[in-house]
Amino acid sequence: MIDFLNLKKLNARYETELKDACARVIDSGWYIAGNELDSFEKEFAQWCGTKHCIGVANGLDALILTIRAWKLLGKLQEGDEIIVPANTYIATVLAISENGLKPIFVEPDAYTYNLTLTGIENALTAKTKAIIAVHLYGRICPMDEIMAFAKEKDLLVLEDSAQAHGASINNKRAGSWGHASGFSFYPGKNLGALGDAGAVTTDDEELAEVLRALRNYGSHKKYENLYIGVNSRLDEIQAAMLRVKLNHLDVDTAIRRCIAGKYINRISNSFIQLPLNEIEECSVWHLFVIKTKFRAQLSEFLNHAGIQTLIHYPIPPHKQQAYVEYNKLSFPVTESIHQEVLSIPMDPTMTDAQVEYVIQKINEFQA
Ligand SMILES: *Cc1c(COP(=O)(O)O)cnc(C)c1O
Image 1 (cartoon, helix red, strand yellow):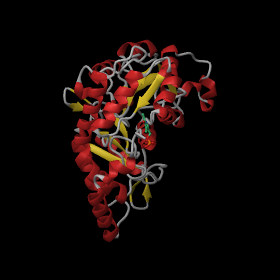
Image 2 (cartoon, rainbow, N blue to C red; image 1 turned 180 degrees about the vertical axis):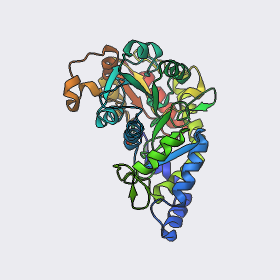
Image 3 (cartoon, rainbow, N blue to C red; image 1 turned 60 degrees about the vertical axis):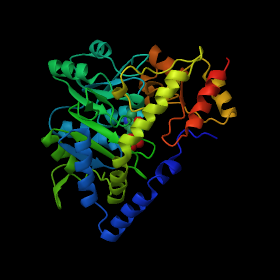
Image 4 (cartoon, protein in one colour; image 1 turned 90 degrees about the vertical axis):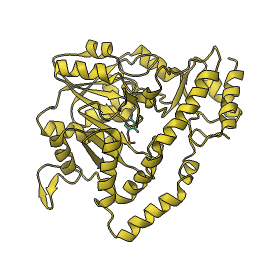
């Protein structure tokens, strides 16, 4: 079986380093908010090209707490509208509704799967206060255009970089374009912890201060609370694991790009639409997503050939039971994406032979 992503093999490559780092934390006797977190925050901020990184418990909290911090700073208020791509993963939308703001769903581009400037312009109202640019599947949004537009209209931009660690435009990485960015280090993400973890990156000192308090009960000083905060901390063990894996991330990204390049050059099947790949730095290939009207047959065929596939995602947020108030909305591009996309194996531990086999089998498929 060719796994979609084999986490055991992935982490086994760093077994000694991870176990040493784990032992270092165990022996230190300090498990929350210590040197590992401090160091990881500095290292990740530097890697992204931002002044600050604030570690939190997961990617959803990174998004929720950033919006909450903007409310506390008087930059957003309940009822404000936030533009979000209709085809995003549900977490992006949860972060908006959790804060009592209103998601305004916008159709993505049918080929990049990301927000476009035109889509944003058409959705703009007097109540629009922010945009969440989701770098879906590892591909960065047109952030140069989005930031110029946001500046002109005085909008906040939050990047959802959960799938796009290191994707860049003109060498400027995801997480350093917006006023803030949420990252997830869920184990299957390109930079994955060995449990839950997340972070916010920003150049805004004031926002960073509020986030540091919010993640720790709203406390800026021990036993003194400025805000009604939460417990959302990135613990020392996970910070130590992330420090090890951050050192190897650029190599893994290069491997992902190599696999994606082979898929794009060699998969040739008239029933299948491949993802775009015009500029290498744009995508870190969190997922390799193909589109076909014959998805059920293709996934069945590949499964039969021992190749695991997944669907990202089968149901868009506005069609979820949780968001029944939006169920009547219609987004044809989004809905066709959800009906036709299929993610094929994208795992930095795949062998050349496995990549060849996936290509061969997909090329053999007949609808
Ligand atoms: C994974 C993910 C999140 C949430 O991250 P968690 O760490 O699982 O909370 C948010 N947005 C997107 C686009 C994601 O892929």
